[in-house]
Image 1 (cartoon, each protein chain N blue to C red):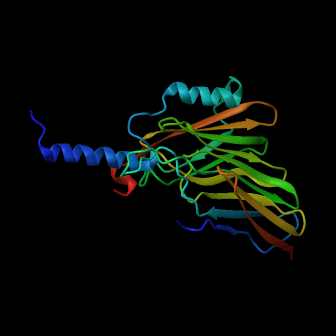
Image 2 (image 1 turned 180 degrees about the vertical axis):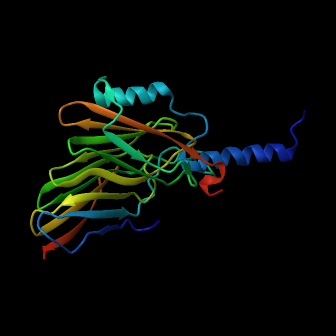
Image 3 (image 1 turned 90 degrees about the vertical axis):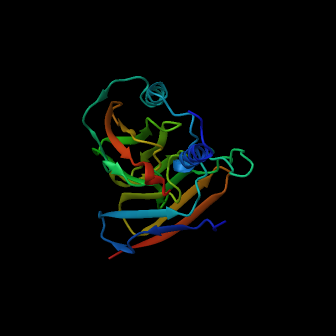
Length: 109
Length: 145
């Protein structure tokens, strides 16, 4: 099974007040719980990322609730206002409670 | 007419393909009631305006496993919920915009089990709601098989 690895694309510098585009991706099968194991005929249990959030210097940017209908390797693109230099913090929460996270610094310049 | 073995095989493969497609089981699909219930839970049963939220998606999805969609609403939107009325469960994704959101818009990729209406419902800061919907055709061969 592939390692679950988040990838984020954030500009490394921005001007104060600029609106930047952020793209995020995490490798995750997003097992919907609807598929059947071909050999045993049993339902493969659901296991998805059910929540994604991004915050900047502690202030929320976006929070997303995911259902199994989000495609595998969930991809999100959204915009963020840059008030100052700082750190964007991303978190993905798996059904099993595991939290995956990533961080990116943004400098003003 | 008797089913030949060939017919039985084709039927079996067809079912299996449909089952793998978009990770859904063949028999159960959401009906209009389930979708209406999901919307009512989000809106509290209130009326929804026709304008105020936009849903951008391809008219024809080549691959039902990954259909790109974008939702966007005016700056007074607080959250946007996306539903797929023809999937086994209608809920797909809900975006909640925080203080530092640069716009009330987001893009993602979703799974669609078959041709259906995809609906976006936006909740505004003043407690009102807006709705947009789009029919997306999902081609049979779209699940890569």
